[in-house]
Image 1 (cartoon, rainbow, N blue to C red):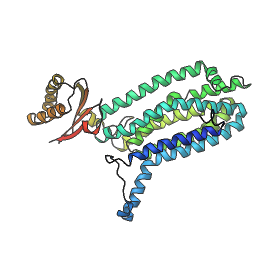
Image 2: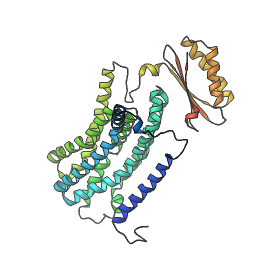
Image 3: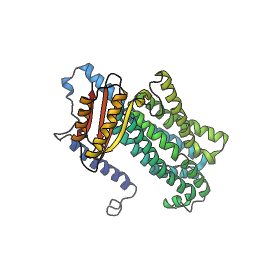
Image 4: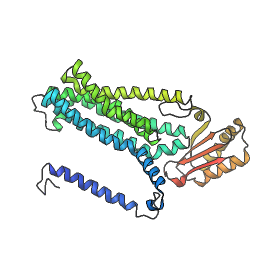
Length: 365
């Protein structure tokens, strides 16, 4: 619109971004005028000074990864543009910025899938409902690897098509540009794991771990990788810095997880930091939300109770009532029982109409 009807050039891009963010802001602000909103505004004048400081401290602590990431991106893009332009020249700089644009398309998927964890992962994790959470994370990784794997293959086989897409097919340094794009594309798959895992760790409030990973992945490791490649391989291949930093970040994640397992004396384990003892005592399955399936599932629940020496009759009746309350045909109910020795936690979730009214977390004595 701004280009065609207003006769603008580069400024049209910035103005369109401002308009887009402005419209988004209007829609977001509408939420605060709704009576049924869950998020409530706090009158700071009703709080004492200590509570205000604690509130600000918690906000900064939880929100710091997102804020710091933007700052790291600003620094690293500035540093790498300067470094690549100095070492590899104009064509290296073209290759870097072109690769950055192409990889932004790939990162959008992993970032969007990672952001979905901010609302779902805390719900599962705080309730120790690890089995469905693990399945969700595995599915996210599978979808990301499948789609971005195809994207990666296309870049490696047909880099000229992406170069032509940006109108750079006639550049004299085309070979350098293509090498740079292919080197940068090698980071697509490793980036899936680092992006989704850091988003996940932030959502389960592993803030220190998230900040350390972001600091290393977004700032320190890229700079170190640039210097190593320049000195040992040469300027034509310095765009391989990103895949090196991503692979090292994955190794750091693995080491960090092992350290957390050691410090917690085995309470937390695995890349998702689950509690293995809880998983061992979890009975999880999905059933069709109809009366026949519900009745069949009751016998399995009875066996679980007998195995764990829990009284049957009253608890079975309570669970059956829960299931029947959210019963609707042609839907799936995800159901899990977690044995904590002293009590059993019942987690019931209907995924097709996923909302708070259809999630029952109840404790059976």
